[in-house]
Length: 317
Image (tube, rainbow, N blue to C red; front, side):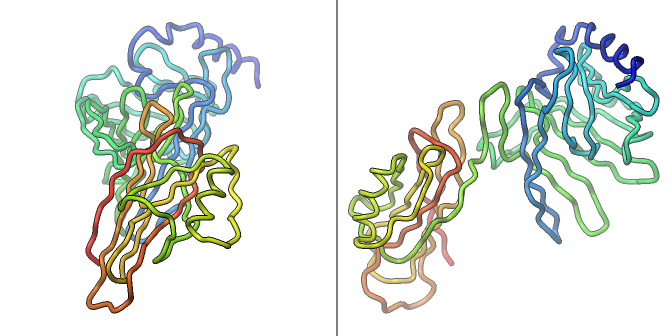
């Protein structure tokens, strides 16, 4: 890094970086990360994770590939304004003015492709976001609109206090590209959707017990005991219980066939090491003749949890 760059970084790091509350809309500390799910009418994209992957002098942070900017950037707070390092000019550029009044418009040049001479407008300080992935409504979000050179439409970005960027919408001729925060870690506290994958499902589980229940399994011994009841004599699938958990959704006895069960979504029950599990049971479509069934679905969670709360929804086919 050039000496002039180091000097500029030092100069900003000496500023009163945490004097106000603006930084709460994008909490920056080592280990923080945000994973976004992106959709478009014509495609779905792989999850995209942004990380605070480096820290310089305690107050200057490196963000990997920030949404909208689409490039790694160095950022730092001074008061309620987030600055980004423009390597082309060798100076700090105003990026996001969280302390500005509603309607404030200004121009930003960060020296990266797609983010030079863009117009930024603070559209709202009281925006509301219904976050399916976080399982709650987020109030008093700050909403910025960004218009790039040559474009007639604005992109919108919503930031929530103590969380960060929670949603963005980039209009296009073939439909809107939308990104939504699905999960993350802020200040060491994970939140949002827990990654899970279906292990197996079917029309008959031998596991006895009440109908419409979810069994949480967190040890190898408990897994072997459950599986011996669920599928006697079958080989027990391998699961790494040092880092993962299993949930089994058991519908119980149904008078006919045609019912299906799916572990639809698993979310952290913030802020404890618990999970909220949504199960969807689909009822038969038309007349069925199969004998009594016991539909089930088993999913592996990519984390260890201590307990689960269950929402069991019934859906017509």
